[in-house]
Length: 501
Image 1 (cartoon, helix red, strand yellow):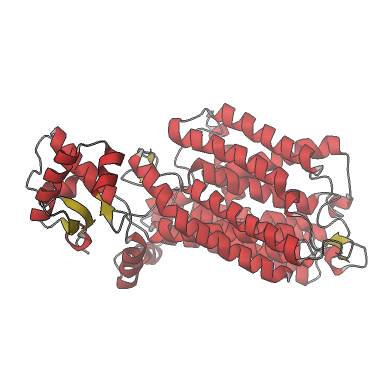
Image 2: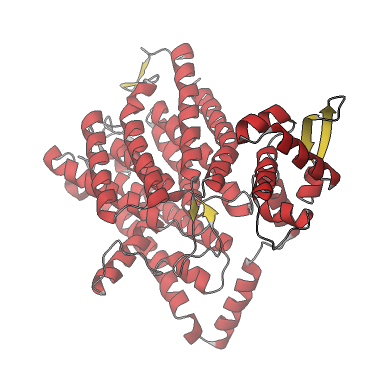
């Protein structure tokens, strides 16, 4: 039953994000909430930047569905291994409140910009509040370094330090399409496996909803053109906080792993090594960048082009293959940890193996790409061939996927309408603006009533009728109903003409 609830909740989260995504995209375009290109960014045109709102909406919708199912179908008194199978979804209130604070902060940062110091203070306060409200923090290493539990006076600042590091690592690594969301999607099943293994179905459901909500965003972010949207600081901050919550639940003395026994096979699992492995690429890349910035006398939060994804793109490799490469690296680190765990390596050994593989893959790849032109001729030639192959955007399958995802996407019709009406390049008059506003109002609706246009756009009926006659004459709209005197009542947009579909 618990797995069924998890699955249904994930489906609800996926559908909710898919539905709300286009609404948020339209909001971002209409209100001009865009990430504009500059010398350090890798996109060359403004891109909407409110994807985090759509993802968080999906998470909440999925958890609401989970709460209903848990209450209706799960025996709340059933106990297995000392943990309640039907732990209340209300137990997630602290993390959802903290995530809401960071979502709001990130949205403000995306809209008007905030100083790094202000964001840092909010992150510290949010994580501190999360720990105090949930009565949990990182206060156990479960045998690593010979340490089991330690004082919460040490655990609380350690948790804040780790949480702030994770949040900013995912924020800094979010530089190419699909990277941050792809990293989270691919490691989510590992976290779900860990939680369900300890019978914590509530947190497993949270991670499942989180993963499912990211999938539609990931698809549009990678394959979409008109429908592409960035997740923004709001999204990366929420992603980082939810991963921080997973760390707290795993390394807290009264968290999900708190009932481990010496005879339990899981007792030989190095939990810190496992948690590091799932965030290895963002953490190792951010650590390297921060050290280099400090060595150059710059602020750790001063944005630049020192990240691994910048080096990939500067080498001529496409965004999609850059993201895929870093995701594969991350999974290889996870695989290295898992092999060391299953081979019976002691906890310190698992940590050493995981750290070593992460350093070789992340730092080694950066050094390789940085020195690529100094290698033998055949290596340089191989790299050039790889950069050509990496650009998949022109492939038929890619184009079909792009067309499918972009279908029905809202866009400003100014240039299209002016071209269709033969006014391209001319200064827009007040009547032209009314024409554009009417067309933009209609584009995401199947049928439109003239009375709705008049009320919504505050344009008098006579002017609307005159504009609609012109639009019909140019084949941009189709009249569905009209009065005896010819006044238009209901109409629809000729999408094939307007969008060349």
